[in-house]
Image 1: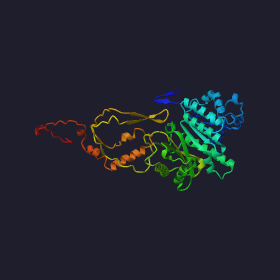
Image 2 (image 1 turned 90 degrees about the horizontal axis):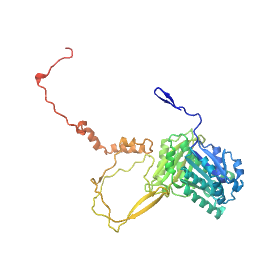
Image 3 (image 1 turned 120 degrees about the vertical axis):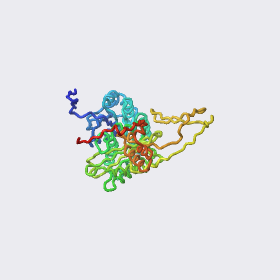
Image 4 (image 1 turned 30 degrees about the vertical axis):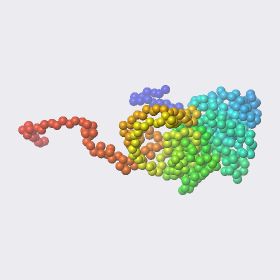
Length: 469
């Protein structure tokens, strides 16, 4: 309870740390291996959970929180690459899963290898439970190698489709692409590198929230990017030296992990920049990285939502790691929201709209586009007929003049610097001349205050005196 003071309140805070709001769940053999790897890496301020039908795999895991799925159904012997067995096993433990995902959990990562039994069948069940509990749900999964057969590939695709139904964002990493990157590595090292990729995907999203950096991003920022974003792709790369920023972002966007998918179609982008204590990320490097992404996206298909942040990682030394997660490929258009860069914005033009009294003909259809928030799809409504036209008193469209009040509305917005830049450009290009002329007018005139003329005193009524009298 707070203790009353003479001029305020004294609050006593508990010594123990707050329970993490982020849970990372490894499902099945592949997912459990990835979570074990993250646990050893020491991803900060998250809770790890492993779920498996294989009791031996759970016993060997260093993670403290474990759920044996379907103990009655499988007797701890696994799902036998049968997704239906994995699904039924997860349904057997729904109450255990709900309990682990209770307060104060806000975000859930589900990692699994698609194509097998437990991961493919149980992961969608866990995702559905998380979604029903109102949690931001992100799946980071791998798809099998082509040589593993059509049946396993088909099972994997069905599992991924189910995850898309219940997850806000699904990040799919193809094993074949990992093989391209690590083709010269021994098999054990190559699979360890694959776990690194999964771990970095979770780490880059989780620690952008939990780890203090020069540019901080909170949970609600990340939620805005990833909520209902659909399938996502990821590119990540490290670099060092004077040109490390450009090299890292180029390598990240050329990464085979992107599966040759052009990020031009991405409506939402989450960027993390991790650097070590020996060489922190500079403002110049931030401008290089965001400017390069903006150039690659293009003006015609600019990302509508772009969040970025920095992470301190002492293991990187003088390296800079750039991770780009592109999502929202299937979302309708949204209001652009891009981080500030030093690129100049085009000057607004005054346009005179021609008024018309003509109404659309009855045979002409008008398309109204609305966004279905629950499904993330566009709904087209066609209609025709008479339309009431409301006359516009002033058809001249003037550019919006940014004011200090506009900038102070939300101090946390990423585009504050861009607004200030526009404001400065407005002064330098004379767009504020009208306001300046107003300031030259006396205040009483601007406020329309009537001044009364007083009669002059007669010379005989003036009494003259001196200070030393």
